[in-house]
Length: 591
Image 1: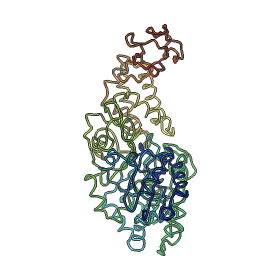
Image 2: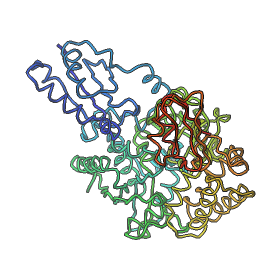
Image 3: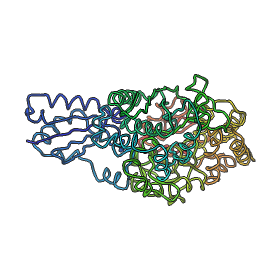
Image 4: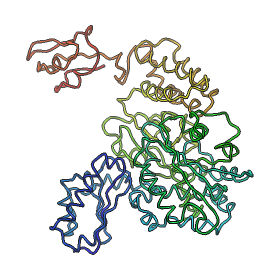
């Protein structure tokens, strides 16, 4: 009989979506049943943990038996009884469900700092965080080190903002500390809105106390006694766990008045955003907290001098604040030992798209794109690697012949992309790059606040051109017009949204100009994606006359006798693709 059993179930958003709540409930039932010995029940603990990273294998369950960990993948409720009986009671892991080499390869090259405790600690239990050294950084700083000493430590570490711009964190804190003011503020920007990005959400869901601890240290450094976490209301689990963590931190004396008897006071409020992408820009975020419409303003003055309600304010994102406790406890030299000369530390990425191993990863700055895609991501799911979009709708597409590029602030900027908040969407040869650019521009155009003309009107004109091109109505000179207008928008827009909105277009034209030319000059989509340019035909030799395509066609464009080749009337075809999807014999050709 085991001496101690620890069961950890992935209860991040991905795990819950895969059925983790039902798995947890089934473990509780099995462990409470009379079939399980009392000593097992007494010595068995169950923990909700945050995102384990490898979201594609959820529900992930750890069974730690007398210190030996076994990780299971794809767990469903009806599999729990066997795990309890064979593994927990009898000590024999169920090998059929244990993670494979892919799981270990996914983690092998990662270096986890902010994710080091995600998947290990119970996000709703402060003692779980403290058992792994949580709040030791605050205890070592407040009352023992001067704010200037801590700021120098952050500067020495080389930590740069992980929200996209990459501004040196210690320098920003120094700027906010210097002004004399009766009030200063710390704001955590948790309003990530990039399509396919879930880094900040997962950190808060998995380890909210690390963010709170980082904010508290930042507040001590600049002399702030009030803080805000600006988080979108679409993250209900993150909001719930954050609020629980804030209450626990206050009860334990790490927030509130006279923290740790030092005379320093600091409180944090949660501000729910309504999901406006532009509120990820710091001055728009400030306006939203103040009760105004979330629209950016011109800079300078910068928030470090005049921010929330005109007072000195530091705004950093979730990942930036979460790094701070680890830098304080392990030292700036330890942190700066990772990464490159100018891009220190690690970066969290949401690895998504046409890749085999999707999920949340953390790697040293400077790791090559090839290592991320093939060694961690496991390579392409089906097709051939074509490009990767980094930085979300504000970033750019990097083609396959640049796959050896290092992923850091400087290297990506040189090729027309950005690190951004950490979105990384992998594309294959079935993706149309013109359509990809249009997808991201549709998002930024829709999310424009409309305050400045270049962004409000310019992105609309760009989208009109792309609509025309993807509908087979492109004209000579459209590529040059996209380039000129895109650069004008970058140069004259008020905030980062407009300044980066043309990036997907500019980068895809730079590296995939031939696809634009095919759309415009040949009225052809090389990837066979743009619906208006598609032609569906039935291959006579392959057609069995099963009639499935005719039954699926919504416009009655397909005719033919049973067991004889069918044909498509191009005048009636609405290019929906139902025939292509339905045919079991690959007799429908799409081009």
